[in-house]
Length: 312
Image (tube, rainbow, N blue to C red; front, side):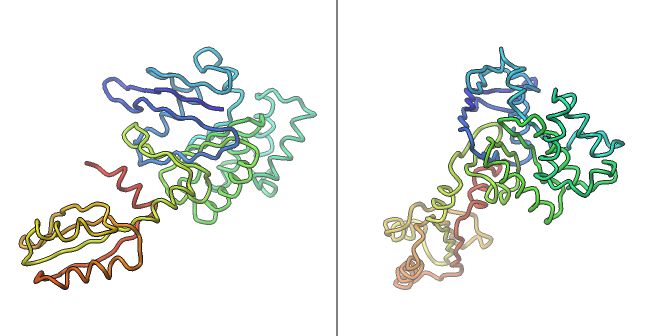
């Protein structure tokens, strides 16, 4: 449905988005994950036509954003991080106003507002002014605004930012409900949002896509690995590597800086087998090495996210 090819955006000499390629299928809920400043919002603003790309192409169905911008905008509902609401208006009047400027006639607008009130849980606040609402309720009104024209694609930029845990769960549930009928793109830097809501995730760092997979496959793959940390005294690095690297189940070994200058500290990336730590310990026990650290960290999506987005 959406094809993004070599999409690039420069601000002066700074490259905010660096030759991104991405295909998004119809009916997919895609999580766009990355640290603050990674390029998520810039990508979204190019996708919605708010920013013009420096280079590259965006196509939605048979339309190009360069030649069919109005048609593409008509297909998209967009909720930015801070919902652009008129705070002095009553919720009912505001939604009526949005229906009017989106071109819905009276007979259709009343039915559409009624549907959105039910979907977004606005029943008890329609008579209130927007500035009297909590941030979570304002986000719901903003979501109803974005959904007014019944768009094929819904784009949400940090939709749960600043919300309390109960409000976050409520917004997640609404997004999942919408995702049964729409293509949804959800931008966030919160990993749990993607795990709880999305079918697939991409991780963006420094303007580049560094990971792209189905959530279930990401979870399955990272669960197949574990990290083991070892520290030794009175051992040579070559001897330790020669004994451990060939060991079945050790994928990679990396030397780390140790607090004790006399110690050797290693990070082992291993297959996640329950018996592996026991076997490694049995190898160590046959030596004269003094073991001062032996700890394990099972990889999860948060670990992968940190590895892919950490400063180097």
